[in-house]
Image 1: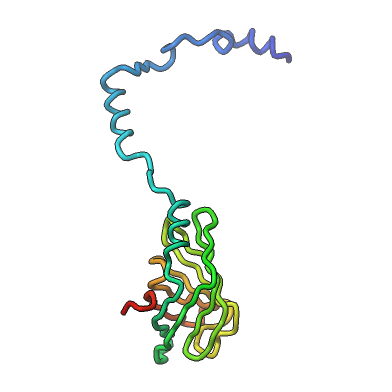
Image 2: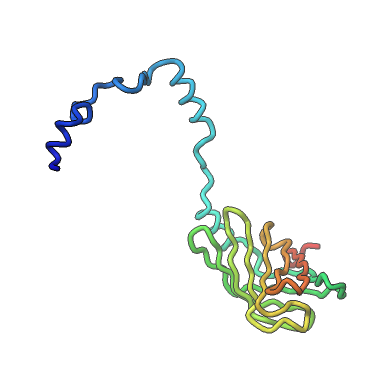
Length: 169
């Protein structure tokens, strides 16, 4: 069947639409104007996560100190985190540096989301001697200040990392 036969069979579909023929829409009516005004108040996001990522990369302290405590009941370990580079990539700050857990130093790499302050930090060395099994990661929802060690297996309890910029207590 050709397109012309279909159009002839359905005359309504082929006829030009008249304004207001199917939906009684009057953009100047008070009801429509009040709904449009309600949409305009606060619906536009003015936060710029890309600009915040650039500011964070420039202003984040390069040295952090704190403690790590494994949930298995071990004593807390002193932690020092030193960033060698903080690079903004879109709305994310890419973190690279070294973490010292007790007497063990390992390279770390991670991402800090400038919009949500979510942190994902991977240790790139064997940290099993301090209760952080290889393959896990530190995840935080408050930037660098408070993170949890998410172990790669359910049988490993994980831990808690609390950091402050160096010089703050």
